Image (tube, rainbow, N blue to C red; front, side, top):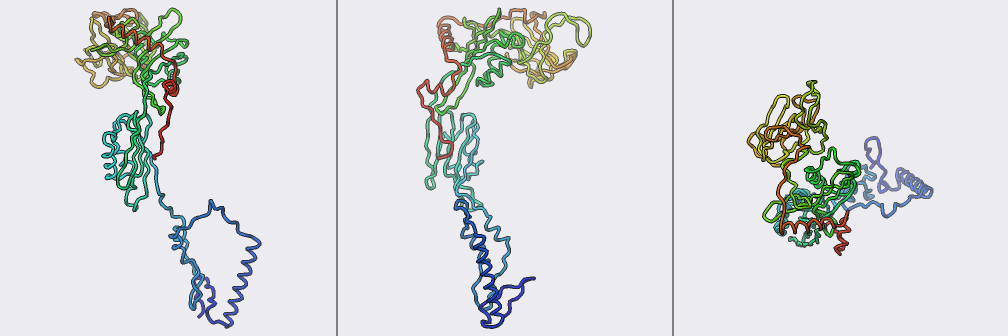
Length: 485
């Protein structure tokens, strides 16, 4: 039977049909010619085998997909050389097989739930709850190190509709504890690895240079500690005018160092500004008397808590002092009853002292204006504000350092700044030229305990890194395995 045409092409002749006929002999000759040509090509252009490392692997599934391309048996009436569409073949070869395991990493946040973290990583609700119950209290992420994350290893799922099963879990729920969870059959085994933590307050010392903030940051001081340092010294130091590049700063802050190298920092404990020339050095020590709240004291035991702060805006510069001047808007000379602090619009304004708000609103040329009454007959006023902090209104009690509003340029103003006034018994005074009352002083056993704290802070090693702390304490640094298992 002659081969049937397929489109424009004719299929190859079946040599098992009409043996001995003219057509059979013609086909045999054709086949012999093709074999001779193939042999010549093989010897003149040998095929280079692929390196074993890159040789493609064809799975059983792919073999089944390409079976139609294999020449069928030479039987009477069989059609050999059948054309097979390439699309199914390409799909079969290029199809990706799901990996046996998958590793994922989820950031940890303070006071978060491990069950919620596992659900976010793709673990089933049942397994997430099972792991949380196995961990107990450790399933609550209380205070992990900064930048900590949970590492998970997920196994192969039964079907594409099912979540991957959890195989391994490694995370750090707190600064002093590391937890590993491993699947054992249908249950989970929990292993807790305590981490040794050393309490070692950090003492950092350096030169102010171009910027106190940048110099301190380069030495590793946290931003929050720098802000505390500036705020504590602002009772005695005018950072806008009195600090020079050659001045030196020294500070101590709470620090815990884990044997894995991480650091956990706390509040400022000691602040010292060493100034040249006739300017006095300033040294402050944080101390908490028994039965009282903690605060900063001078080395002699006297409190730094003056009734009023000298600078109610951080990072501002004085653009106009107290006294007679030519008004920049009205154009004639008149008494300037306050001090102007130039600062970017929106900069927070703090209450110079604790007291009661007696006015908060629009006040003529002062624009947005707040006035606070303090103890001892003192009052402070804040003008040209962009806006008020939520809740600031007449009758509200405010604490020293509390934000009450933001720098602006409302009223008779030529640019963003704070106009700050101080009154004593109703009369405007120059805050720079007036001695502001201070708080209490330490005595007796409390003063002796305080003096011991002062000597301890002064004698701490300077600029000691976390690794040096561990070596000094005789603790061998170790790293926890990041990947689960």
